[in-house]
Amino acid sequence: MKLLYGERIGKTGELAISCVGILFDQRKNKVLLIRRTDNHRWCLPGGFMRAGETISEACQREVWEETGLTVKANRLIGIYSNPNILATYDDGGKFHVIVAVCEVSLVDGQLTSSDEASHCNYFTVSEINELDLADFHQEQILDGFAFHSIALLK
Image (cartoon, rainbow, N blue to C red):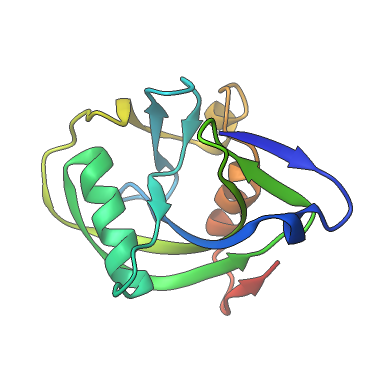
């Protein structure tokens, strides 16, 4: 995936909904990130929603597929819909991606790598600042750590 930036460039693509899960450690001072196998960048676990899924189901499925952890979506942190970003793919797909970021809690499972994630680990904000992080995930992570009382619309 490659991101293109421009004034309202999102209108040149199809609309797609993505969900990511923010899973904190027990003390809520670290967040789980994965290192993607395709671009080797760190990011929150997540991906595209499938037709017929709720946002909670998509978020839970994506976290499980990438980390081996069963989670429960507890609250919506925010909806991110920047119209000035277009996600492009090698197959020619172009998408204006709407991202639902949910805080999730651990239900069960053993943290493991997957076809999509070569590494999974918990990081503090200061450690995250040293990582090669996927575009726009830092904003979502910082919003998660802010523990706002209402969901954000960005």
